[in-house]
Figure (cartoon, rainbow, N blue to C red):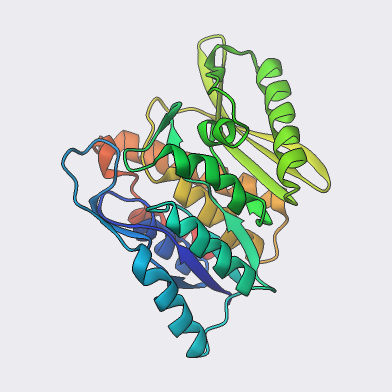
Length: 281
């Protein structure tokens, strides 16, 4: 059992962030210690008038108290941040966690756009955390932001074009951040009438492109679940490529099940009924 410090927001309604990170990693037999970055009444996708409480002033206090109480973390895993100030706090936490595996999920936006509560300053400064990480898990939009480039919709690409693009993209991220492990999600392409979605992974042994059929729906929280399942698998001793393949397949099953059930998109995927899939992996 590993102890994971999960630095994410708590969105009360809509499955994402801590409400999916904790059960995913717990089902994989890891202990999760949450350090909330913000409290939201709902997540930012598909809801209007949400209540947002920035927890920047409590994060360092809570972390310091946990450490003074004997808490020791095998992994530090950061996700959605509530303010630019929190980037400094997370960087400090990472530097104090010298022997921990560091995962930064640079949660900033999707479909080429920043999330509602994100600022240009936060987008520019996210690179600071990625430089400190062993593993980064951006989606395609966030990868473009990290490289200071415009978002490129890959759906018009062929499979070969998408693979070549993904390999070049991962290579540029590796050159910039020197992370041992990189996983970029949400790279779509078409082959005839069929649509596919790929996850590009780069590590010390090379590059892989993991492909799944794309269900015609996109749900909030899937990036959080993917990164959590990936980390949970790696901490169980599985290889990075095998872990990424497992996490990608798990997301595909969740999305297919949720789409078939007709669940409203903004409610997120049906994680609860599928947690059993994680227990024996």
